[in-house]
Length: 307
Ligand code: NAD
Image 1 (cartoon, rainbow, N blue to C red):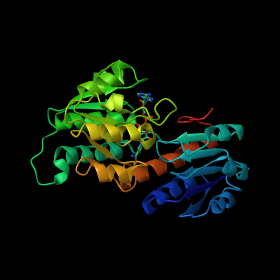
Image 2 (image 1 turned 45 degrees about the horizontal axis):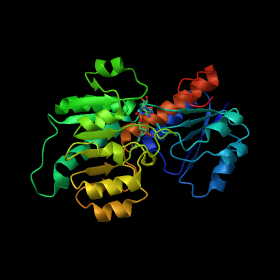
Image 3 (image 1 turned 180 degrees about the horizontal axis):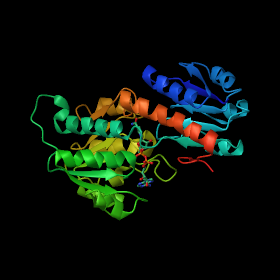
Image 4 (image 1 turned 90 degrees about the vertical axis):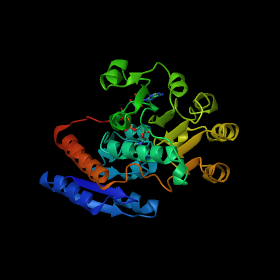
């Protein structure tokens, strides 16, 4: 019988835990919970004898992996997995997976909440514009980007996308115009919605040179990662270009400066809320449990993200 730990500083909804438990127990395994822990020591203690670990934004570093002598697999219930030290996991022969796609619709819907807020002037009582007929640029056509495209078509927007790796045909098959570069996307679109991961290549890549290409009244919506934004350059650009708006689900390090300088043009959620829906929570948690059972029982490595 394998022992599977759900370790969540910010717990799953109770209904998600119930679903995870059903999957694990139906497979004949045991589920243990470490929720709302406040000290790393609690995590180090809890991982000691577990075979599998389900986490959310919880950090799994070398110290955690050293402590987890039986551990075979970690599944991050969610898309981004930069909270897991992949090299250390590989060195410990621990498989790391994410659960791509499970929260994509939730994130995409939030992006539209922000877009409507931006074009309606942050609901300040003045007349705004509509999304219909506007050019939307989707920066990265992955799971979230594809959901954004689907919803944008419902709004009647003209949809463009740039993805460094996704073939143009895949983008065009979705009824979206594929452009050849990020620069072309920003030059073309009234609104750009960011959906790139945080990688060595993308960190700080959303800079003044790029955002500065947007037409007058440009709106940048970020439900991806804060690390991709060059904050100092964006602040300087927004000082020069008083027509630009920035809305984000990932509070910048310089949130106070953004807030003070750009009232009515800047908004951040108080904490990351893109995936915070009952549906996404349940989907990702249950997918994580299925992936663990598939791996432990049948060696299925789909969604593995480390070597
Ligand atoms: P995904 O892996 O499905 O898609 C990412 C896409 O980015 C891929 O199509 C890939 O080809 C493309 N890409 C990678 N590097 C690129 C580059 N340099 N230039 C252009 N395209 C590039 O990921 P996803 O599930 O769509 O998630 C997208 C982003 O949203 C991630 O940053 C993720 O961390 C973030 N996210 C945020 C929340 C939230 O709560 N706000 C929730 C889920 C995901």
